[in-house]
Length: 479
Ligand code: BGC
Image 1 (spheres, rainbow, N blue to C red):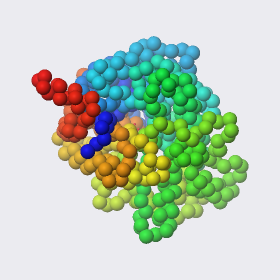
Image 2: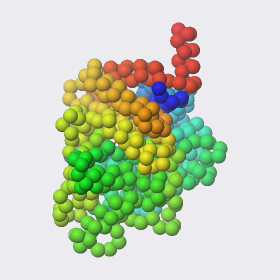
Image 3: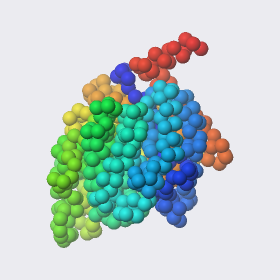
């Protein structure tokens, strides 16, 4: 019982699949630099080649068609289009590549959802301060306008920035993602702030310059776990849960959807911690000034990346170190009934997606929601017959259905992460999220559908509506 024209998609990102890291005039990105340093990534792997989608795009398109997707979410490599990050120098061959991808998709009646930024900042911009520098917002806006201008006649669903939380926390607090900085308790907030400013500038540009003609929609993809109190009857655990949600989903969703500013819970927790530690000066969580673009209202839909759930209780305070973890002051617990799939952080909880969707409806004024990422991985010996992942997709999609039918959430689409196995950031190729297996030891990088891919294709074919259903029927009659 999915709504008419529900988007059935799968997602990838440029650095994780494309390879061709120096091909045809592409500039380096911070992930190229990061992976080429020793000790950063599992077994010192890198995505110089990855799935080689820069060359093998047509093989990816076969996978998209085999699943029967109505939508495909991809990201553009900023440094492939603008090698030094600025519009002073455009790499035409990069433009040609994405034109082909977009045109091929449309020729198969698959709608592209395009992410402008999925973790891979041009290295030249990093050298000028990267996301810590306030000037990055204007540079991003110029890049966004270039993309709207170049591809917006055909792309109608845009994501400006993927997971600002992950970029800020893993890149600048934990140092496990590029650019690998560990500037605890300070830089992640600055980076998050500049990402919000950059996103808002790009949204306003689209709104003023392109919307009337191109008639598309723009948002940013916000990731969050679902959090629930360890002891639902305990007031402290309930408060800890509110804090957890404020520091994850709320950090970016509250400014965009509710007030134009950060959640009060977040600022007061950070400021109280600063006071405790004798940290003087302005709040570590930056304030929006009147010169900043208005943040409130800069999303045409809610884009949610959801993977896992946690139970929470207060962390016990008194850590005596400046860090986001001290500001959040939480202890996270995985319920023993939630199976861990492959990586330690991924406790599978499809129920959490339904709860999060309901929370979004109630907290963020019932927005249209696209689930822009959700998935399940394999580690170790590969099982093409990935029965567990089949169960995962079935139970997750059932929860989405319940969120729509029973809770009245306006969910417009679901994108599985990922179309195919790819470079899983610091875990390299050891962690596989694909609906298609990629044989990285084979020179041809053969793609083979997993059982879960077939299962997802069945679900899609059963639920497709609108123009996609008509085509499916026509195809059947024809054959
Ligand atoms: C990211 C993807 C990543 C996936 C699984 C998300 O945080 O957007 O790039 O591969 O999670 O870890």
